[in-house]
Amino acid sequence: MSKDKKKKKDFTDHEDKYDSDGKIKTKYYEAEIQKLWSELVKLQYWVKDQGLKVLIIFEGRDAAGKGGMIKRLTEPLNPRGSRIVALDKPTEKERTQWYFQRYVQHLPSAGEIVIFDRSWYNRAVVEYVMGFCTEEERTEFFRSCPDFEKMLVRSGIILIKYWFSVSEDEQESRFRDRAEDPDKRWKLSEIDLKGWNKWEDFSRAIDEMKKYTDFPQARWWDVPADDKKAARLNCISHLLSQINYTDIIPKPMILPERIIDETYVRPPQSESNTIPIIY
View 1 (cartoon, helix red, strand yellow):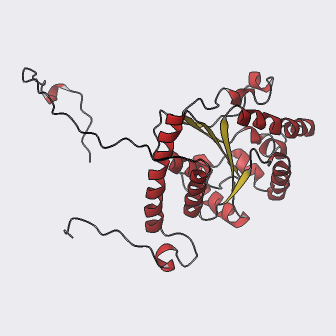
View 2 (cartoon, helix red, strand yellow):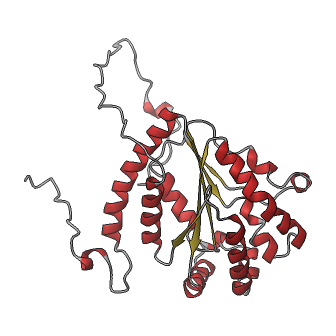
View 3 (tube, helix red, strand yellow):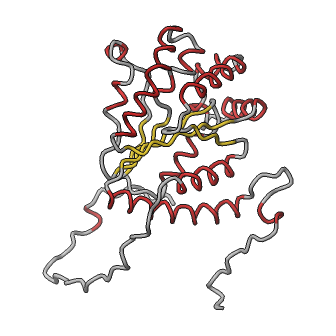
């Protein structure tokens, strides 16, 4: 083998894959996620070719790693066929609408993968625990949500719901990291801080939510997320198993010889507004 070709690491031993704390090592994670990204590209080609409508909902406790998961999931995808929906709190007008109304306009069209970074499940957990909705509104949500989701599935939408779980100690560690790191501080909101002392209240709300909204047409899938890297690999792997797809990636393309127009004269670069070359 030539010196310029690197031999791929063969991760056969447990110590090659996991550190002393049992968490996935970076090199193993990077090798595995590259494989999964290749499969995600195949999946997206299939979704577009077959006109599938895929809706993936990511929910979970604060600091459970949903944002990082979504970034890794979408990294290899063509943005023309995939969207992330992360809605802000409802406006005054939206508060007067049917609760699900503002989400409907973001549902996938044929050939599209749509990812919800939080969704209508705000009502069942965050809104209820933090006092932003009434008991009656939550009860109505539990009545309406299964019917609403069954309608989506009957319409042809492939609905996949993930709940990211994190332990109390790990959540505290991530909160402290965000509070201390100015580059991550935007991830820590006032709601996060207010909800910090409501762990058990959130737990009860989560249990109640799953009791009413976990049903055969739209199961909840739990993702243990104390190890972020493992959570991403496990979640992407599971997602790929939920949709039967075939590899229809086009064959390698051959670039035609470029026809050069020798009459074209490029203006001097000094006439362009070039950015400072710092690096």
